[in-house]
Image (cartoon, rainbow, N blue to C red; front, top):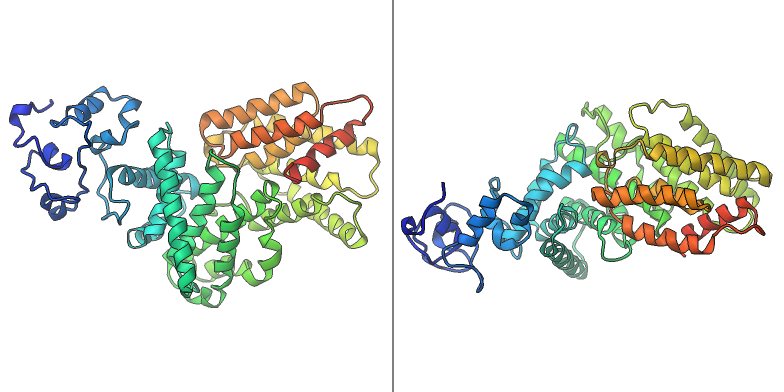
Length: 460
């Protein structure tokens, strides 16, 4: 039942007080009632009805339109909130924060195996982290109304400006969890934004630098489960972005420069020593070593000239390592098999002493196998952009019309499911590659496929 206007105690004041039928003292930005019971004030705009009926109609209809305008958000039932730090103490930001907690975070970190509360507790006291959370949510919620994208961009710019000021102060960052979580989420935001090409490299490089400063503190931090799990989330998120986004950003090569300083195995050995239960990894689909191989293979495949002797030795080492991964049972996650196929393609590009005929046959087999595999996967089970990595590689070596149609249909499935992050951008990039690599009788199939892959790796 909806309350009639006659039963309302006032038609003025904040929307919270009107909903609760309380007399409002009309103190802005936060009235006394909302301050007392820790609610966020929502004030009517100039074109909003004074009796709040517009909001009630939004609630009554129960349609998706009810969240298309931030004016209606005061009616959407939300769980209890922390006091949102300025400038995020507005209803639309609060709504996006709750979307991050309930919908976005479980996609980024496996809900079944990880306690996520530690990072959430940091946000109310550190506005840049709150801004990073809101920016990720605003870019990923479905449906994606214009106002949420605007909030995402504004929050992102606010966070960047804050971090720039912090750098000027030259504050010690050796053990700053809030700063590290913020930079990690900025990488997530860049990987899923739709308005421009990804710019993950600066944030991923910064997160790698911050992680490299924490090595002396690791043993102390692993005395509590919450900080240990937080550090594992951060190191795995860094490896995820630093390895996969190399394909799309040629300048991103932070792993090779700081891998030794990070001492990645320590994160996992400390967890075992402290009996910290980790049924599954928080971010990565399989061992971090597989993702380090992805980074190594991507860097080697980017070389356009013939390999020198030292690089040939590396190629054979990577090929043996990849063959060992093929012997591991991944029946519980078929995406690893898809990644295996994409890695094969990368290494086949620089295969020493392989005949063109064999190279052509192997590339074609990998392409057909990979495209078939992709159709059996459920995009909603994976983090944003995760499936784009192997799909981009498969698409780059597609030279026949039927192959490209299948690739495009898979990209469209990611776009429609809103799980593809930069799917639209990758689609456009592949179209540019395809414009150059249309099949011609005067060129060999192998040369055309490898030329498309080189164009992708060069970000052409």
